[in-house]
Amino acid sequence: MAILKILTQENPILRQKAKEVGKITKRQRILVKDMLETMYNANGVGLAAPQIGISDRLVVIDVGEGPLILFNPQITRSEGLNKDVEGCLSLPGRNEYIIRAEKVLVSYIDLAGKKVTINGNGLLARALQHEIDHLEGILFIDHLTKEN
Ligand code: NI
Image (cartoon, rainbow, N blue to C red; front, side, top):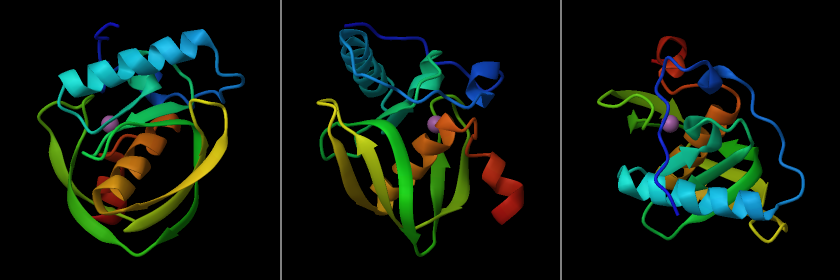
């Protein structure tokens, strides 16, 4: 396992649309372990592959309920609105109030290659939306002028 370098705001990879993941290979399983270790080491609750320089649709999240590994995640339903403070490992030291959906339903492929769905509320819903944004090249500060 390895702690990976987290790219910061100015890196153009963070602005790219990430690629769909096909078959989950050993390379991806190693990457997942490294991403989790990197996220925990940085005291984050989520990390998207583009943040460590890999433009794949893969995110890891742990809001204190154990690790979640999501390939090709997609929000299929969202409900309500919630405004809370948000930060990002790629924008160290920056925290802003951001409006997000309060609840989301997300479909994704798990580490075993199975298509599953998850219901997120509160912090989990926020983390899911924040990390899925990274796969579209969107940073949380992009929501500031539009919605605040
Ligand atoms: Ni982030």
